[in-house]
Amino acid sequence: MTERIPLAVVGCGGMGHRHIYGLAELESVGRSPFRLVAACDLNEANARSLAEEAERRFGTRPEVAGDLAALARAAPDLAAVDVCTDPGHHHTIAAEALARGWHVMVEKPMGLTVRACQAMEAAAKHTPGRVLAVAENYRRDPINRLARALLDAGAIGTPRLCLEQGVGGGDRIIISAWRHQKVGSGLLLDVGVHFADILEYLLGEITHVYAQTRLHEPIRHRPQEDETGVQGFYARWPLPETISATAEDAAYAVLTFRSGAVAQYTVDYAGHGRPFNHRLVYGSAGSLELPADRKGLPIRLTTAKGEVYDDARILERVPGFRLDEVTTILFGEERAWEYGFPFEETDRKILAIEYADFGSAIREGGTPEVTAAQGARSVAISYAILESSCAQQTLAVDDVLSGRVRAYQREVDEYLGL
Ligand SMILES: NC(=O)c1ccc[n+]([C@@H]2O[C@H](COP(=O)([O-])OP(=O)(O)OC[C@H]3O[C@@H](n4cnc5c(N)ncnc54)[C@H](O)[C@@H]3O)[C@@H](O)[C@H]2O)c1
Image 1: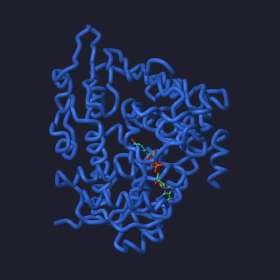
Image 2 (image 1 turned 90 degrees about the vertical axis):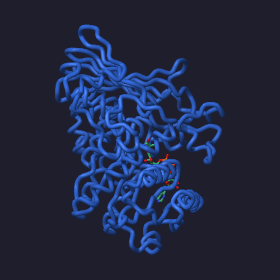
Image 3 (image 1 turned 180 degrees about the horizontal axis):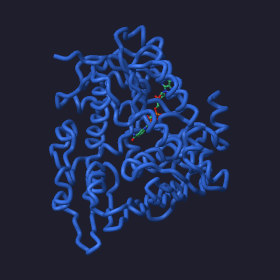
Image 4 (image 1 turned 45 degrees about the vertical axis):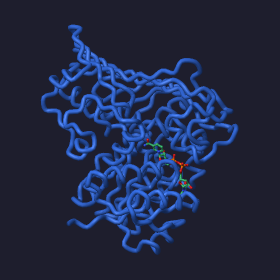
């Protein structure tokens, strides 16, 4: 039997816990390449909580450590780390872990600024043979795999327009206080990288951005008990009654793709009234309405002749569509067009796919699906939106990616010492 890769989770908050639920899901289908040997967190209670949950799921209790030096002592055979700290620590932890000879998977956003991503890419260049992967999950949703297959097969002809829009949130604290701080990773970065990645996954490279951004709700309040959703994972960490927000909470943008397609991108986390979510792609021969990520709802394809495909018949348009082996095992269907698991189970399955991909890249000396270069692009696109509003002009993504344009990020870089 192939040796399991000794793994530690670094950062044992909400996402660190969700990751081990994903690892256990992969273990349950006999596909885990990893052996969880340690849990590392500055906050010892969080590391211990993760170790206890791991013991319940895997039968052995991982070591507990407070920093990477302690981690190296506690787990001398460690080969890989999964970095799930809040974003401001990703670049220092990834660089140190790579220098220690460990493979690294880092949660999105890859780094807190473009400079932070550049520091990570430089560290990876100095440690050839070590994998640096980004744990971006939306694209791994089987429904997004099908969407990509439909676009590639020309089901709507040439894509011309994408509407990526989400409004809601009001004046509530969304998940954590740091998600509302400019130096912590505001929502336009923290969630923005998901949208940047999925848009590029579906439609190719984004080249230019024009945006207006706003901070509508400088004071935010703790959500009511019944306003849960993803926040349910965070119930054990009580939120303050109110917080002062310093990060922008709304972006109204136009994104241009290398292909010539254009996206209207509206994300407003301060929307009051009826919440609204939309991902639509219009092409020269039809349209695709994509469901919210990780919900398993069907895609609706409408052709130029008005034919609608919103059930299993949609698969007729993509005869070659097949999910990869691990996704097929986890979702129980090689040609999934819908699925119906509770959110927590879907979340576990998608995080299991990330781990399988990271493990394959380590074992086969290959490239993970979401590379550091792609992770850095998502960060640059998210900042291009903020930089564009700051500069009051259209910006080339390349100018933000190279670091030439960084007026908005300067304060964050200074905070990080970059
Ligand atoms: N892909 C997704 O759907 C998704 C969802 C939620 C969070 N995330 C990402 O996961 C990461 C973590 O988010 P979260 O919600 O779990 O945050 P969190 O605040 O719940 O947890 C962060 C944890 O990291 C620990 N930590 C901070 N600095 C550390 C350091 N230097 N060394 C060790 N531990 C340290 C904190 O003590 C805390 O336990 C973020 O990058 C976030 O964007 C991704």
